[in-house]
Length: 150
Image 1 (cartoon, rainbow, N blue to C red):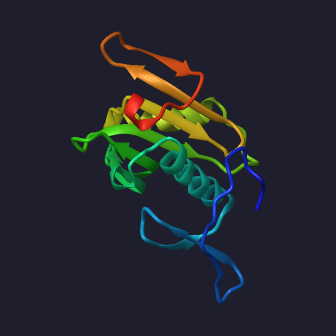
Image 2 (cartoon, rainbow, N blue to C red):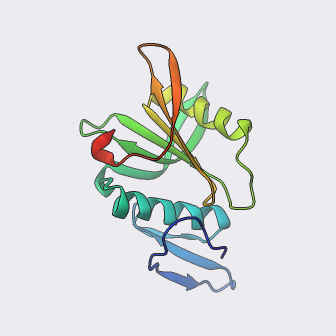
């Protein structure tokens, strides 16, 4: 897999019978197909937990939601201590450029979840914006804050 702009961590990976690879997802507590996007997700989740002190117990991967009657899945959702969505993270493979379309996707998810922070990463570039519902605007942050700063 491609080297990312994230620290290296030790992962459990295994070869499947069909010669594809799987990686252990600690949040879903199961083996998942090791795709380029999944490689980014596993690195980013581990970075949030290890470096940014995000509580794993308040995080979920592939979180389902319904938008306009259509089932969707958020890549990662982080809750606040009361269980309400606080952060939504959208991942792309390292070969995919982060564009306005990527932000449009995460904003559509946020129309349902009403999180206060949106993060987008392709493993090489990471963007975080804070939503200000009181003033109906948003701002991009220079860095991704630690959980206790959210």
